[in-house]
Image 1: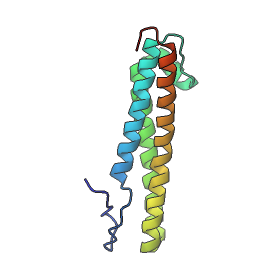
Image 2 (image 1 turned 45 degrees about the vertical axis):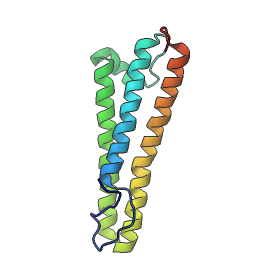
Image 3 (image 1 turned 135 degrees about the vertical axis):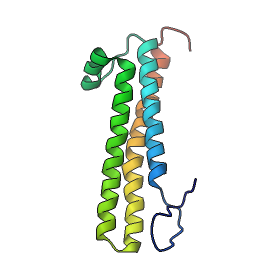
Image 4 (image 1 turned 180 degrees about the vertical axis):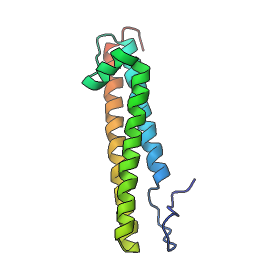
Length: 136
């Protein structure tokens, strides 16, 4: 694995976020959010899901199936949006500007949802620690 985005033409070897790294970050933090949701709801019955769409899906297809579905959709939407923006920038910019813009797009496009998922998972685990019916 490399921290260098070698997909950019022209030999710029600066350290830049790659699509693979961004996808891995979003997938990992989304998985952490999903796990914290499943564990929290199963070990602390006083906790409820705040998202009304997810809550409705919990009743319809189950908690685990819902968090897997929602996580996969979230990762897919983030990847499609971020990489779509990357393609647009690459088609309209000069090389040096493109490299910087692509790095910024990927940092924001993958970084923002990763941070949000991490904050949500942290909150879930904090709630679990204070409301679990079994000692942790």
